[in-house]
Structures are given as structure tokens and as C-alpha cells.
Image (tube, rainbow, N blue to C red; front, side, top):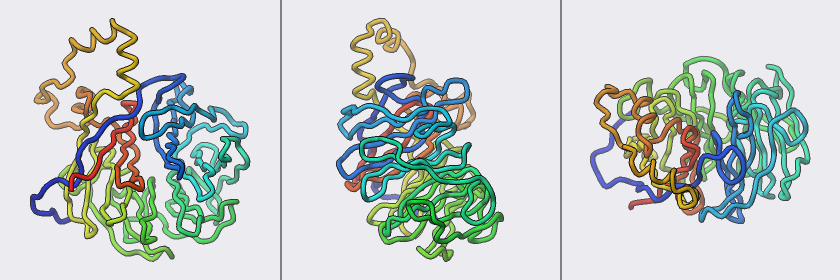
Length: 340
């Protein structure tokens, strides 16, 4: 992937949303988010196998106003085992993929589970580990069929419309694809996780381009998990294994690499204001240690540096062009805005 010449960065850090909380207001291993037209943000939590309290959908807004939570861990309607992605249709209904139960759950605008569909299998229309979700401009749902190495498009009630891709490394083939987005012009971008690349397709599934190779250098990827494209066709990729987000121009030239610049969120500051001992202990902590001992290992650097991304699982762009990065292991969302 070509590297653009030096110029002013496209993005600058703005603020952070969220705080770690297994119950109540806060996130516990969030994995994805979606925006609704009324300004509300729906944040999908996955929790982890040892503590499933984080399996939920939290609702807030850009100003960190909290509107509550719904959904939980389990097998009943409105519950998930391993939720992976969230998307919202033009009517404001919420869709969530569950890679364990191989189905899609649908919630109304009042947060009630109104339907779910999906069946495990490799035949057309069936699912094995559904992950990324995105709606096209006809309000049909694109589903990343992770373990079947393909993309399937359904009507909102689960009727198969088309499918493309198969297992492999050639153009148009996939190895455990994960994230997906539909660009404003209608093209489909897929984070091809196992092949360490992002692929671009026309709305009918025709291959257009591939971006990236395996590695940790500029423009390379290590298990990319999510991709987003804005109205100017800039491309944002959560480079999960390299603990960063990379920004590309419409031709795939690298413009910027982000490692994370998180500051204390409103919710975190309110917690510290009410817990003096916690605040004192934090004030004594070294939140930006010397990274020399970690020999450039991005995981170790992120583990030891609070402001850095640590397992950035999803990247999304809102209608104002702000970029939201779901910072999974830090239980927060880092928000960036345009610098130019």
C-alpha cells in the first residue's frame, strides 16, 4: 500500500466516552456501536466468558448522557451468548449478530426484542459465526458470515438476496472476514481478518480493490477487525493486532496512524470525584511509562499505557465526520474529529 507524503494529519483527538463498569452506567468489554438518527449511540457489550454481565446494549449520546441498557446474556429472545456486531435500519430498529447462536436479533425503537432469525450451516442463507453487520441504501442487511468466509445480503426479515466470496487468498476471497461497512457511494468494504487486508466491492459483490499486507509497518495490518468510510471516501481501519487505527485516502495511501490519546471521560471523572482514595491512587500512578523494555511490542505497550488503544475492535464514522473507536480492553470509546 503506498504511503502519502507528509502533510497535516486528517484527524485530531477530541474526547473519550465511557468507564469500566460491569453493572449500571459504563462498559464492560464493548465490541461495536451504531448511531441512530435521533442522536443516540447504541454500544454493544460482549463481556467475557468468565463474567457475562457485560453482555448488553448501552444507550448514550455524544455528550455522555446515559439512557439505560437493554438485552443480556442467555438463550431467550433478547439475549445473546457471543454478540459481535450491531446495526440500525432506517426505521430505528436495532440488529445484533450472535456468533455463538448463529442468528440475528431485532429490537424495536422501544428496545423490545421483536424478532430473530438465522440457522447454523454452510448452505446459502445459513450462518456460521456471523460477525459484522451493515445496511445498504435499500435497507437490506449485509452479514459477514465469518466461518463460511463469505458475505451474505438479506432482507430485514432474513430472506437471502445474494452472497459473494469463498475461502482463499485471491482477490474476492476471504479468510475469516470480520468487519464490514457500506460507503456513502454504495461500495462495500470488508475487513478480511485472516488475510490481513481490506477488500472493496461494488454493491453487486464485484471485486474492486484490495488494500494492505501482513505486518506491522506503515499501511500493513495484523488482523484488521473493522473498517469505516466517510463521505469524502477516507478509509479508517481498526488494525486490531497492531493496537492502532490507520487512516487512508480514497486511493489507499496511508495518511495517519493513531495509537490512542484517551483522556479521562465524564463518567470516569464523576467516579473519581466520588471516590477520593481511588483518585489519590491514580494521581500517584505512572500512566505513561518508559516503553523501551517492550521492544516495540504493540500489545505490551498498550497494556502498560492507559491512553493507548488496547484491542480496538470497531471503528465508525457519524454523520458529522467524527470517528469513534471502540477501545475494547479499556472499556471506552475514543472520539476523533477532522483536523483539516
